Amino acid sequence: ELKTSEAVARNLKVYGGGSSVRSSSSAMKRGLASARSAAATATATASKPLGRFFAKKDRSAKPPLAAATESVVFDNIVEAETRVQKTFQEALADLAAYMSGPKSDTLLLLLATALVTPLCKSLGTSPILGFLAAGTILGPNALGWISGIHTTETLAELGIVFFLFEMGIELSFERLLSMKKDVFGLGLSQFLTTAVAVAAVGRVAFGLPANALVVLGGGLALSSSAFVLQLLKDKDQLATRFGRASFGVLLFQDLAVVPLLVVTPILAGG
Image (cartoon, rainbow, N blue to C red; front, side, top):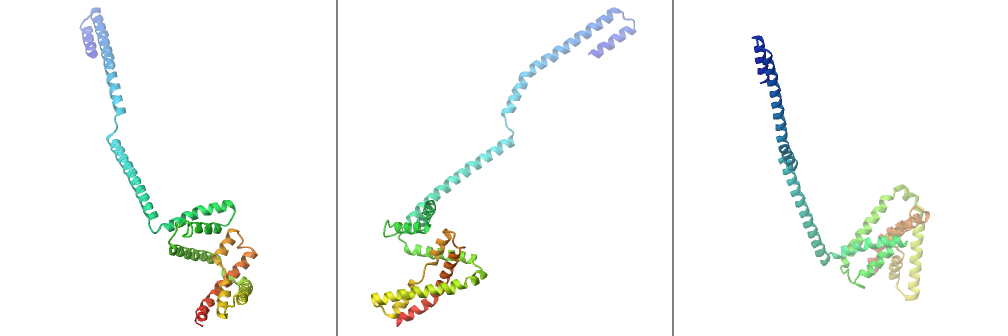
C-alpha cells in the first residue's frame, strides 16, 4: 500500500500535481505507518497469552517415546521387586523346612563354627577347644540338638581329608628329604618308647596278654595329625624347629598306622 501511494504521488507530480498532492501523499504515508504499527502492537498483545498457554502445555506434556520408556521401566522395577520378595519368602520357607528336617545337624554345625571361631580368637585360645565344647553342648549327651552322629562323622572325615590335602600341597619333596631324621629318627623313637611304656603298664597293672599289649601300645602311641597340625597352625609354629619336628613325628605315626591295621586282625584271631 505504501508503495502504491508513492507511485500515485510520483504520477501526480509528473503530470503537474502541486503542493496539495505532496501533502496528501505525506499524510497517506503517515496514516499507513500508524495503521501498520497499531496492527503489529495488537498482534503482539494478542499472541502473548497464547504463547504462555502453549509453553506451559509443552512443559507439562511429555513426548510419547519418553512416556512409553518410563512406563516400561516402572513396570520392570515393580516386577523385579515382586520377584525378590517371592524369592525371599521361598528362601525363608526352605530354611524353616531345612531346620525341621533331618539335615539340620549340618546347619547347626556351620552356625556353631561361625560363632565359635571369632569368639575363641577374641579370647586368644585355639578354636579346637571351642569346637570340642560346642560339640559337647549340642550333642546328644547335653542339649540333644544334634542327633545324627553319622552325618557329623562324615563331615569330620571330609574335614580331615581336606586339611591334610592342604598340608600336602605346602609340603615339597626337598622338605621331606630334609626331615628324614625327624621322621625316621625322632618319629620311630617316639612310637617305640610310647608303645613299650603303655604295654609295660598294661602288663604289670592289668595282666593283659601279649597280643592285646601290642594293639594297646601301638594305638596309644599314635596322635591325631589333624588336631596337632591345627594347633601348630593356629600358633604359627609350623615353620619353627619345634613345628618341623612335630610334623616329622606325626608323619611317621601316619606311616605306622598301615602295619598296625594289618597286624591287628591277625592278633585278634590268635
